[in-house]
Image 1 (spheres, rainbow, N blue to C red):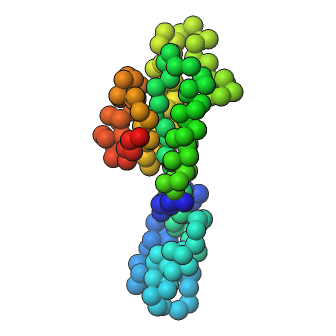
Image 2 (cartoon, rainbow, N blue to C red):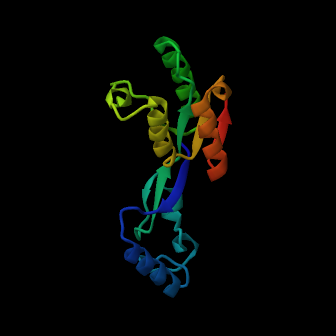
Image 3 (cartoon, one colour):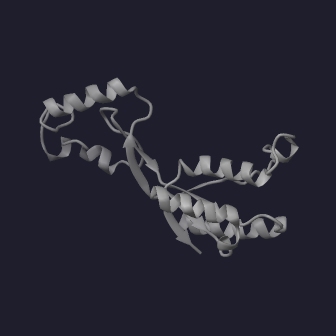
Length: 167
């Protein structure tokens, strides 16, 4: 699994500032450690070697990199969608990403039932873009360039520096 390091979202901004100040006051070493050596320099060795989770002082968190799929779905048979998606998920996971799904198998998202929604495709796209904001990469299956929604997703990825992976 691929991981990235982020500021711990579980702590308040003032706590982040306090921890950063404590690290600075401790010459760059973890304020939670007594000894000062290369193993306790922030980001400490213990955190660098752990697979996931929060560092000792609580400032950083290691989380899986996430990837979602951009796939044409309009006028495509459900069985084809599922088959293509299964292959793409396998590739994504083999690349070390955590797969994020925007496919509503349980049919819980039904914009076509809302009388105010005149373009259900836009409603689905807005949900996908919301999910994309939590991802590090987007996997584009063959034929993506023929789908308006997929082209918008690619534009957003390129504009905001999200990695594009093409089948």
